[in-house]
Image 1: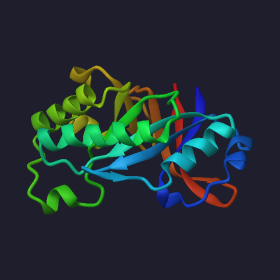
Image 2: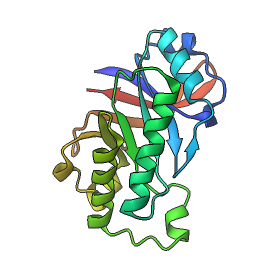
Image 3: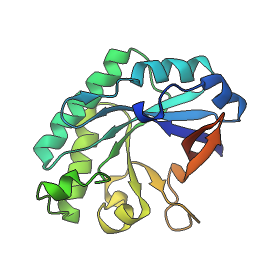
Image 4: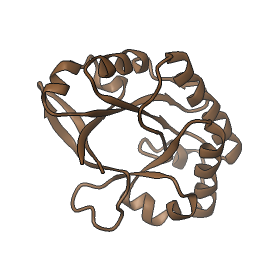
Length: 187
């Protein structure tokens, strides 16, 4: 098991040397979101993490409302990673949740079969080693992750007995150098 963090533009400037000194060995960095948006700090965060000796992966936050949207989001994700020009050491993860309520506000049905199909479509179209990120609730109620057969990054604050995934996000309050990060364990 190795320790890691996940970050996006919302974390601001990151002291990657302090992160490495705290025993962190990998970072999953948001590269893109939605149909066309890129994380403004992706290339800088990838370069900083790599320079500090960390393994790096990426994630895409989805605003897709259909399989067709998901396929377009996969192209956006792939373009963001290719534009950064740095090879990933870890998979790119697809985050299909609705943390900001966008899907709810736009009439999304939250049908588990459709959500699973959307996850599958992203994985099949991104063209890069890919997995799924989701909370325990989403992995048990909305995504048939077993049928997809990919790496799973499970967000669950508390014991992680039911879903033994590739990565476990165990907290959103890991303090390093005065900054808070999501803390992760890679098995």
